[in-house]
Image (cartoon, rainbow, N blue to C red):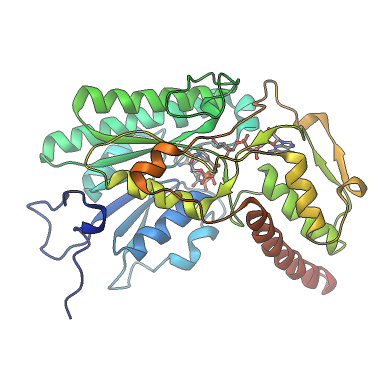
Length: 366
Ligand code: NDP
Ligand code: GDR
């Protein structure tokens, strides 16, 4: 039985695109992902490999391996049927990104790479702006040059953020809500968002921004508040720590499951017309509520363990995020699969297992 043609996506009704004169007849679609080692990058790589794509990821050189989240997907360079390839690169290095785009000749580029921690962006404002803001511009320029030279289209996804809404202008926030960024990270994301829109309008690029509200998972970085809480719950329950120090417990976030959100990135790029979309659950919860549920899930009371440390307060806070995903619902078929309670439970369960392994090692003297 012949393999289905991955270049055709009749289920979305969009015109097939992307086959190039220099592509072999049965060659799969190629995607380039910046930030492939991050939470979203790992889920997106899984999704695209599952759809038959050839996936190319940008990784930064580091003195220790930073590829834990994609280890299960990695195939050695010798494997014949290899469909995941990692390349060294960095968004701040425009020449390397240009070279990579020319080499990979991607049909789709997903720009997920970022110094993505809001609090850290106050400590490293210039680097954050360079990687998040100017890094996006460098990548867009690399794609524009490649498109002009090759005469073929590349579709581009920009990881925009609900942080761009910042100080509340209106709730729920949708595609028409004005931005009022409250951190160097958010300011840089606003720039990246508008330069993406500008390249779409100026050069006709198929470039879309997904304004994604917070999305979490067991793969979430351990310094983001949800994972910091569930990690601590697991460790406290196993007797590996006693206290959890947090900052502002009153902040409200619209939290969803990362696995659902990466599917929307892909769907945006399958549309005939590029556009911008809010992806959110349309529910909001305080950090305190997340905490209460996570501790309760293992029979603990946060009052016995949580303490406030002002070091975790931010110079300027985003108090309330609540997204209206009506447009994505209508046009992309967006429907979150995971409720808030299921998300908390999923993360607590995973971190209980992790803490159990840690405890075994600790008991064995490691
Ligand atoms: P993570 O912090 O988990 O991952 C960030 C990724 O970017 C990592 O692979 C990291 O590499 C890479 N990276 C960092 N700096 C650079 C650089 N200078 N050049 C190239 N790559 C770099 O983020 P998430 O997966 O959670 O988020 C993905 C994207 O979506 C980010 O752009 C984030 O800002 C945005 N976003 C996230 C939301 C969320 O709730 N998760 C919501 C809205 C937007 P390394 O592993 O080497 O550090
Ligand atoms: P956020 O996520 O800033 O929304 O950015 P984070 O989990 O860091 O903070 C959420 C809220 O929790 C409060 N908070 C704490 N935060 C952290 N990290 N550590 C603490 O100890 C703590 N205590 C309270 C924060 O003040 C904040 O109000 C995330 C990132 O993934 C961004 O890249 C992305 O763009 C946005 O989500 C949407």
